[in-house]
Amino acid sequence: EFSLCFSRSNEAERDGTGAGAMTLGGVDPRLHMSPMVFAKNVKASGFYAVHLKAVYLRDGGGLSAQTTQDDMGKMHKLGLSEAQLNRGNVIVDSGTTDTYFSSALSGPFNTVWKELTGTTYSHNPVSLTDEQIAALPTIILVLSGMDGDPVGDEPIGEPEDVPNYAGNTDLSDNPRDVVIAIPAAHYMEYDPDTKKYVPRFYTQESSGSVLGANTMMGHDVFFDVARGRVGFAESNCDYASLILSEGGSISQPPKAPVQTVSTKIEVPEEVPEEQEEAEVTETYEDGGDVNPTPETENQPVDQSSSKPGPDQTENNATPYELFNNDKPKQGNSEGFWEEILDDMKHECSSTSCRSVAALIILVAMVVVIVGTRRAMARRRVVRQYQEAELEISDLALDSDSDDEEGRYVDEPPMPPIT
Image (tube, rainbow, N blue to C red; front, side, top):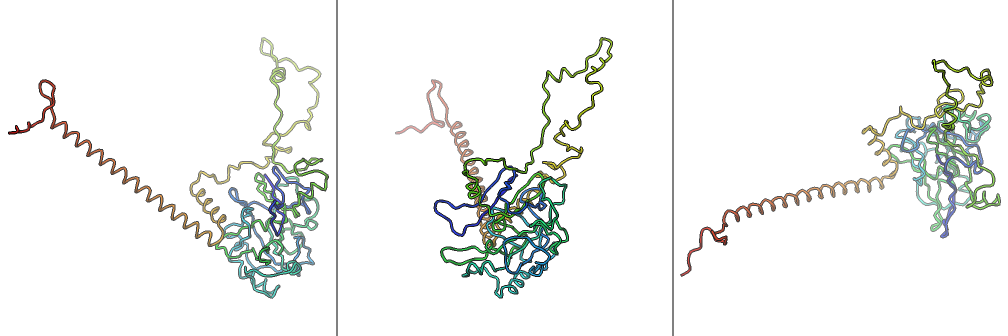
């Protein structure tokens, strides 16, 4: 398990640019500006996939996803069913820079965008001021919340009091569904050379959607493999300032221990061999058991001191499983190739990238075929040469012999020279 927290910087410095923080083994709550909420990871293996329930455009912009019922007048829902939104999976992929959505979103998105801004949405560079960027619509995503047993790190309080929960609003029928905001400052990329902005939210995929790095930006995103969930907490991801404000440095550990969410399973302590042998019941010669000593005979057992085993919780229930045997195995060839094709499709999202990938695959196939044919032809020539060499050797043996004194003679003998 790990978490990624991406910050935003419009310009890259030659000496390096701060990009946020990565936490291994859990999360760092010091980075969070809101409690972490959890969406369900609907994919058993491969990419992390979430279930998208609705997409909105919020008039007037705004950075946070916090929404009340009074804010619903600013929310404009894109009228698509959940089946249309989730066609081909919706994955969370930090390796994809931009965000890509299915082409089914294109029509409703462009219509609502024009209603709110008065302009046609395109990917052409445009000059905008900071005030104009802040006023552009914020894209709001509603994801299915985690519906499993509580882990213990969920937000405390009612859902309507948690910024990234749908709460008692009309955003979703489940108050614990997760709400993610993508402000214009994240989906509009600034080019310092041209001093213009380019939209990096695409709605042209034939199938499948990718929530890329610009969607994750401004959030600490927790990838919890064991529990099958993806956590989101709003953050500025400024780890350097956080450490410096505490009087330390990035290379030094924090003064106080950081609370992290971990999937480590507590294993009962091993009993030493000497102690184990001492606890074995002694027997008489006739086979009868020795009576227990008075000190331990009537003492009550302290249930609180016994620790649950690795496969049990305190109430004897089975916790989450690191390896679920009910999930499809990679050994299934059909599912295996389906996973590979699905991963390739999302890794190479644009049409031009897919065309190049197809060309590379075609060239590789041609190279393999030509190489195989050449190897076979070479082996055939070598075999024919070896066979010809054997035939010549046989002819030479049949035509040559020795005389009685062991000298070489020709057969038949050469005619005398006159």
